[in-house]
Image (cartoon, rainbow, N blue to C red; front, side):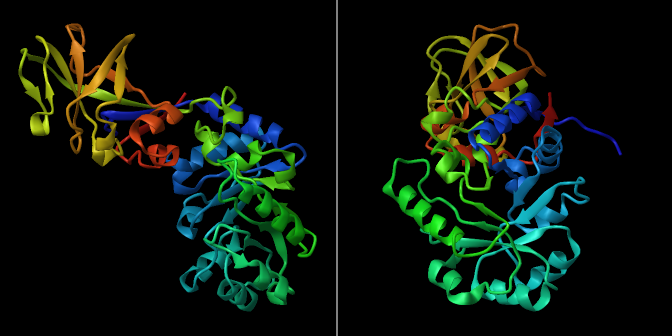
Length: 348
């Protein structure tokens, strides 16, 4: 098969990924530190994320669906995998065959696993205030889980990235559950929950966004490193005259004679129109502002009088997650998971 390089690439920093996990593990204290790798490792490539984090000592990984679990087979020795969306009726074949545990989220899933799970251990999610997935507290305490072998009892914090009273309420509810429902381990904290302190760690933490360079709370600032660096190849450098416009809608007018660099990237690649007006890129050490509208797979940068820039050169996009989120209005999660399949992913 002929390998054709893409005009888009993600430069991924393996050392930063591992350093972020190690910092989160240290903040987790005596609790084990796992990793959420759903959405293909937040678009970095789940297989590579598992490989690098397992080598660093991570043993517990979480995906959303059984399709994601199957894509990781065969698992490395000593690695544990949990499927957060549990088991629907169409999932039972995969759940029986794959070496992964379902996270049961409803009375229906508990009954399904009790009938067909052959006594295998599972994980269970309890809703302590998110009102998303999970058994209600009264359901869990009412005997629904009797006889189920629970490896990890989980809940999920709804407002951990804020200084919300809901955090303390959920902590108290989960602590009461941990004293009443037998399980081998208990897990509450995501990335932001880890930053709330040791009380939230229990036996296992489950960071996601902070592994990949996102800042979930101020406590992580200065500790979590950027991991993802998108780059786009220049398709054409063209001269524009003062007064000429660029792109759909003629939203940018050249204030002077100069150069415009057209790059092979657009909203089809997850670089959305909301980046217009605030985004930019760098060529060597020169800053190039994004100009005009973002097209489906083309964007334009004001290259000024940078006559040396040419076709085939690579532009490094500004993509510090908290800064880009503030400028674009997108969440740090959206900024990562929107990056599409047309990127080559290159670990350095």
